[in-house]
Image (cartoon, rainbow, N blue to C red):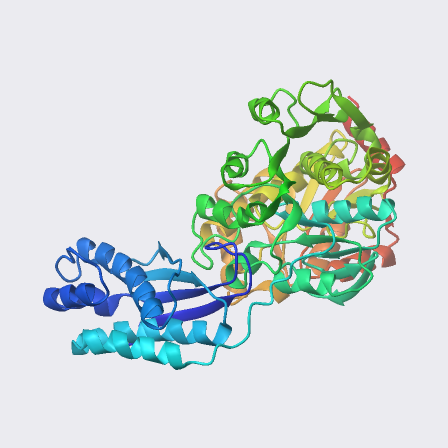
Length: 562
């Protein structure tokens, strides 16, 4: 069996280095099971002095193997003509596998070196340790260099946004604020590439290719890039730096994928974005999320935090070191600076995307976007105007808390792709539900989530709704069987005693089933990921109309009436 599990070329800043790198996933079986004498000779050949490899297949051997492989990479690099090479070694959730990463300047030679390292490990069972290392170095030395990294150094202002929830809404709002200033804005997100508000390329461009495509447009004056976990892990970031970064939050989502199994690991991935913010720039961080706030320790930029709590200790700490903060004081979005009185910008009730202040998540998104816009130099009065004119509708923010009236019921369409997103949707649904009215919910999940997270979605949905329908996302099964996904959602619902659940094959079918049961004043929520445009079309065909800010304010008032 070969020791090389995967060789991945990371095109730009990544989890391991702030520049392009090679990531090797290696199986340590050959080294872990090698005889003690072979392991000792191997250690001597690569310059690992006074090594204690331990007995084969023990915990001591596993730790020796991880250290030895890092030294092997340096040895092959040195003997092939590279005098200094940084190497990072990380464990995985499989004790027999590790990740090794090193920067690259020449693509082809770097890939040859990655394979050569694995071939040395493959040769260990034969015991010819000395010649295997020498031959590996010779192959690397003889390899063609290949092209240099294509990581882009921006020549225009760039705001980079990451986080588990809210990054798309926040990036859209920042782009809107820059367009309000008159800038020709390009931005990339999970929906595609937009230039001056027009979709020019559809698809998920939250990886490095998105940033590159935005900056490739000659007339773009201002760039906003949405940077997702997957892009950072699989390809790296396509830019050498950003001027302002935003981290919205870190919560449970996509765990169990690409070696990221815990929230702390996920936070480390997200931290790549503020880590490459230029020294004279700003890193906008969520003061209420401990993992995000802790990123202050790895940034070169100044910290600008946001929090709904003006008395947050995190705000005091940042202000004491010369940073900035954006918060809410007496219902006003306000900016705080050291040794100055608060600057009230605009009332929450005048920011349509906050749904009259009802949507906690969108309040936080507005605070984050306000911070980023001011940090990058957009004038205060422009920011205020932009906040007043950005609506939570299908035009400005498709798929995020879009609210409609269908017959006499309220319909809210939202991505709500994880626990935090679903709870935020339910919060909004309850905020517009009149006393005595029911909450009807269309539940769905994508297939690449962990079983316990899918079950938790079913539990939350069943606990907080009066009528529950499963609306499947056929396009996002991602290798999971539809029946198995259905069973997991039902298992979660059963924890809170809900078993009478209708299953629908599509999101449109789920919405139709819910609206059919809705009575005047009821609220219908749909977790919509796969069929957004079809859902909008169905609503229009059935006489539904988007709620204006005035209509929404009226619904909130009715919901709060005794």
